[in-house]
Length: 316
Image 1 (spheres, rainbow, N blue to C red):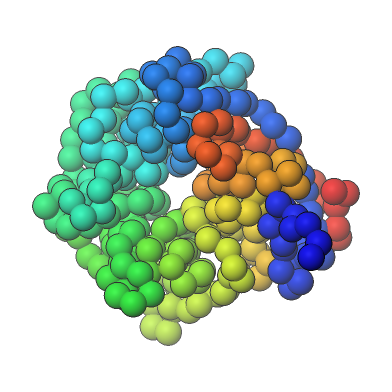
Image 2: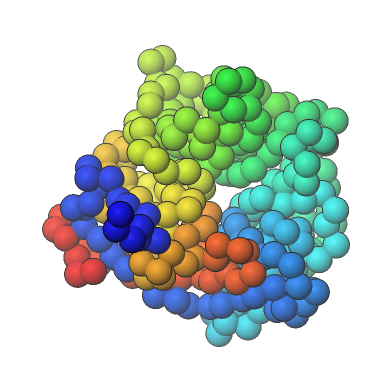
């Protein structure tokens, strides 16, 4: 038998898509002072840009929120967080919305903090039984969050909408297996959601915030052998899906048709395959991808500049 390649294979239907290779931009490990410097694993998630151009992201293991300046100076926004953390979103008023959990069996929370990490206000309590994983804030001031429960045998997960009053919670999608990423189109008329357990990308036409338009719920794409994770959309309406354990991001057009992909260069050696999420830099459109290595001791942020309109293959 021949030697098995550590590089995950790309499905034939996606292999010839226009391809861009990201470049390492920032590195962390389990001894990084901003993470506490105590050792252990480091798993990055939830990157998002604030109005000052800082890149915020989280470490799921320590529950911390970190801030990386344009000059790549790393500071800690939130260090004391027993609630756990999986994803964040930044409200137009600067507040940071946090979704997280520690043990799915105990439920999770959604809470907000000020940009300096103070003023915690809980919106979703653990007693509600949800397992919040990702958040997308709409133009009305409400937000959608994924409930990462269930599996392929028990479809108990879903996506819910929290109204601007921060009290009214309405189920939008139900019967899901590990609902994960959520993202809104630029006009906030389309909601995208991923289902990790069944490898599905959902495309939802919204009649009003929190309400699906007639015949508006569709399966836009079915992933092959990929653990699809978080989602982000750019100003053109293109959608980016992180493929965990593949070191890869798949790019879709506004209809949900694959039009390109971004590769982590280290994937060829089987390293930094834990691509969990990404952020789109306002203005430049550059994509910042967070990933960790196989044993969780090292993590990196990669940057990719996408040129053209995905009309033809780019150089690998």
